[in-house]
Length: 193
Image (tube, rainbow, N blue to C red; front, side, top):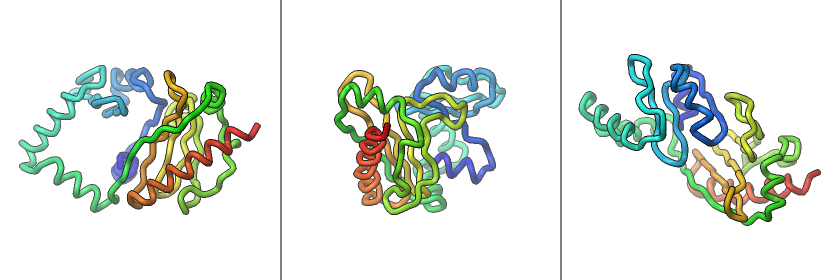
């Protein structure tokens, strides 16, 4: 959803690897206005350009929701429904797949050329990433993007699994297909030397 809103607003999306350390400098120097991460919360820049928080903080988005409600006299959920009417209703989930330590190491070092698939859940693959578009840093895994969905696969640092994150703008069935095909795409890529 964020990608689609950014395009509409004519703004630049700065996508970096997972982890607060990758975007904190942009918040501190004012080059980023909003940063989010899976683990919790978000960080924002104040209207005067100073950072509101320099860590992931669920309180900040809650305060923003309260301010939106007070100033616009609308529930933020209503505003989100407006966005879904305009951009589509995203379906998102995360699943886990088994992986040996060797497979996890290989997954963290894949190259886009190791992905042989041309389609993802019935759509043409438009990008295969192993480096973050924002700063070209390795993402420690793989992201595969189609027009209405994507998945990212990253090895767990603590368990013999890899995590697959996915989103679809074509519904829950499409997301299920993305996850099914993601495991096959990853397995096939790990088999290419």
